[in-house]
Length: 228
Image 1 (cartoon, rainbow, N blue to C red):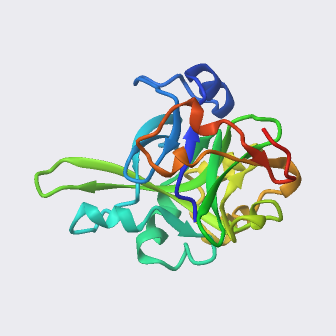
Image 2 (image 1 turned 135 degrees about the vertical axis):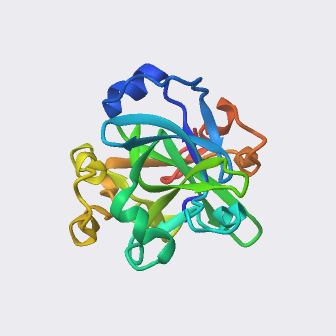
Image 3 (image 1 turned 90 degrees about the vertical axis):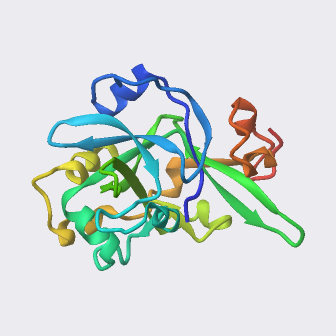
């Protein structure tokens, strides 16, 4: 599962990294982005562009938008079979830019949050799907889900699932609107090598989406027991 993200990059870094024009909407750093909230997404229709979307996919055929809270993630192993995801997999894939994501370690007494990120501290793109839902009043709502896969050795020390982090060279294939064959897309949905990632424990401030400030990502301890 992936249930919390950080999008802390500025507009210039975001545009440069994902080869898009700077956003035409206000970009605010997010240190603790939760499902149900708006995030920045890269989509190609057909040219790459940035768009704000709500986290939690609402299929175009859904009767109510609240179904999105049940669809914050799609499993790579079954994404091509699920009714909610197989259409978007063929026609509306996206990248979710991130500077990090969080998972929680279960202990006897509590759950401890950890931040995962790339060793080079560069922004990365998560594989996602998006769809447009129209309300009974005719209003359009664009939403997305994040695809998850089995955890690599690093993330696996905390959780058995992780979001699919696409390598930059795989992002073009994922966004290619001419590609609609799930069999060709499935090989992209694999865990990133653990050697390319790092992690450290953060404050339980991240447990509440109300806390969205730099203090959330301050390191307490890394996976090797070293204090931050």
